[in-house]
Length: 446
Ligand SMILES: Cc1ncc(COP(=O)(O)O)c(C=O)c1O
Image 1: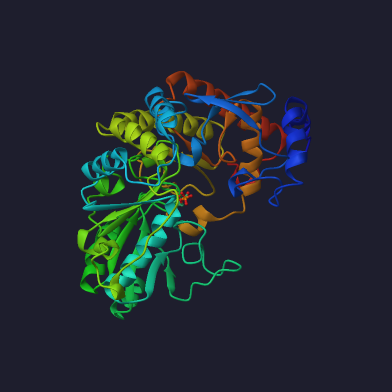
Image 2: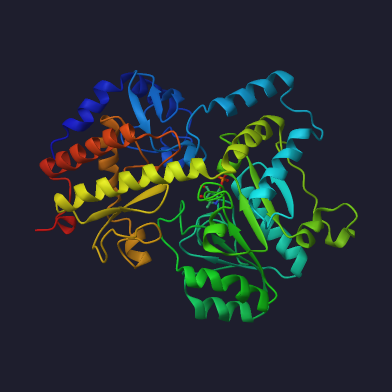
């Protein structure tokens, strides 16, 4: 393959290259600080961001489709959020005490998500999931957790994929999503404290769409067997709708976890849910049933300020609608390119658009909750990962920053002009790959 792309990238990213060289001496993961930031030769080093754009140390401008790993549905630097953070910073970063904003923040959350009879803040999405497991164990007196293979909940022992090196998770059972008989058989043993599933589909709001009928069965299936049911809305919470994905799906869990968008761009996690379940945190609970929860960053004033400002803007559903509309236009335009170029790949899903490569089982008419393939194994197959990474590099060189070309996170700050520019870069990248021969024959239609 002619690798003039990498040569050009190195020429136009010289200061990033120098920083990367320093970074590899500090950070073990090839200089990166998050697995999604590992890329050959390296990702750009960013200096600042605003709206839908960000800029790197070499002065390159990007339309951003990473959006703070999904946390920024309002876009970068929303004035109300920035103002709230500035004002709070001058009042104090951390009181180590209760404060007014944490109350307002929780009120906004419970107003949007009716399951939130009680709210418990922590520092991240995975912390919230760990607390969901702890609460369920204390409430039910059981130990086991049922999860689904296609879901991501964090990197902690009982949340990451099974068999991950260094992780202990004997009490966790993982079954394929939709495997009704396996899920029922497990729950019928009466040993399960919690069923945990991701809202919106497996991985970032729906890389692997879920069978909605099965999803709607879960609350009752869990209840009948004395198990609690938690929906992980760390990505979808306030991104899919003001009430989260559970409002769209019409599902009422016992517990739910949120993070990302709930903090308006600053770190947050929260477990929300039934008052009787969260009462394990109440100091009046007997010691054998009481959960001790500390956490330096719980409801810290800066995150609370950003969270209140952002959540106030989510209430009417307008940012979510705008992000989803721009995503749909990109998805439709991108699919038109892929069909025209006879590439067996399609874009699908809602405000986080996923790129699927492989056999197309159904064409894009209703791809909000569907993938072009019905087989999760095919969707999650990593055989074309090098292809989407190469595509991601082509896009970066053309000013589009996405997760390896495989995932595009939209916000309310993205405009029709952004979509037009992105579609032009998308088509030029497909053309360049066809020309350099980097699209394998398996995904080229004759
Ligand atoms: C569905 C889901 N749950 C939990 C997490 C973990 O959240 P955090 O990275 O804030 O710990 C993530 C992170 O991407 C996620 O996508």
